[in-house]
Structures are given as structure tokens and as C-alpha cells.
Picture: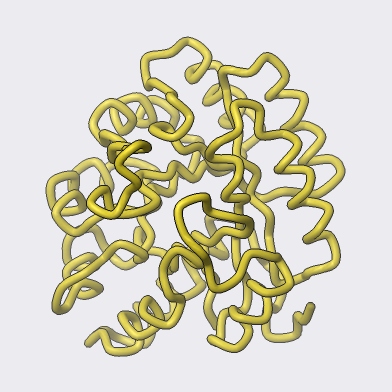
Length: 262
């Protein structure tokens, strides 16, 4: 059983994707052996006000039990709190996502602190997207740097009630921020792990409870991240924790996923 905590639907303006619609993602995930996917709309990365694309995703995924929509929030917008309330009441969302470099968000903004205070008050997990694609592959007219970790980790450490998934962490960043991960309510996904024994190295660095399966699909292939986990020389409990146990606890996914279908 696998929960993919870092997946997307929609269109990417810089290349053709293997699938764009929620139904296509659900089918691809099922074929790959993924039981649940936490998804966000790719178009939201380029919308100053992402509410409309969030609503489009939420409506399209309403009947898919294997897809959990994760709206993208812009805390600099005046109505974001009302939007989150609506998403919770009408769609029972389990997390929200921000992509600081795509959305021009700064950790020292008063609006960001107010946003985090709201998330802590309602107990809603946050996914913070560190990167979407390799900077070497970006369109030369649209270069988006990787999100700097230090200012965001420093800020988020002051909000221990928010489980924070740093999506898109690389192995060198994990090693450099080992203490921050082990000392705070921080987690990372596997989507950008690379190199020999990357899963083993991640567990040794921050422990098996801090690592969650993520694919970054459809920008990355789901199967490549599944193979990382399947070929890792780790115990069955460690593999189960990374595949689904940690995500189930963090995002409060308690349903028996084995019985779910579209």
C-alpha cells in the first residue's frame, strides 16, 4: 500500500505531460500500485489568485476516493482564509500547499505568519514545494530558483502544531538540515532523492518517521520512485512507514485504502 504525497494534475506550460486529468492520474497511480495520491493543480503555480483552479480540481476529484486534493494557497491574497474554510467545509481537504518561489512568497512577510497561525489553529498540515523541476531544464525566459530552506525552516519551527512536508528536498539538503528535521514537526518526501542507497541514507539521517513517499508525478515518473523504495535495503516496518504509514498519520488518512476504488 502506497500513499503518494506529492503529485499534480493539470497542464505544465513548458512541456507535454503523460497525463493531465485527474482520471488519468488516478488510472496511472492505480496501475503503479499507488492507493492514494495527494494532488495539487499545476496551473496554480502561475495564478496570483489560485482559487479558481483549486475549485476546478476539487470539483473534478469529488468522486475519486483515491485522490485527495491539496489546494494551493496564496497567503498574500485577502480572501485566502475564507477559501480554506470553504475547502474544509465542502471538500474536507487534508492539507494545503504553497510554492514560495513560484508565488513570490517571503518567509518574513506578516501575511505568511498570519497564514501559519491559522493553520496551527485549525491543525491543517502544510506542504511547501521546494522545487518543481531541475533549474537546468527550465525555460530560459522563465527561471525559477529553488526555495531557500533556512528562512522557512526558521519560521516554521515557531509553529510546532503544523506538520510540514518539505516536498522536493535533495539528499545534500537533507544532510545539511538534519537537526532541523529531527527537532521539529518537519517531514520530507522521496521524489527528489537520488544516488545509491538514497532511502537508506535518508533514514539514517532523520529517521524512518520523517520520510514519506512522493513521486512529483507527472513531471517525474511514478515508477522510478517506487523502485527506490522497493530496492532499498531496509526493514519491512521502515518500508511500510515510508510507503503509507507516515502519510496516514500526518494527513489523518484512516480509511482502509485497500478497499477503496475510484
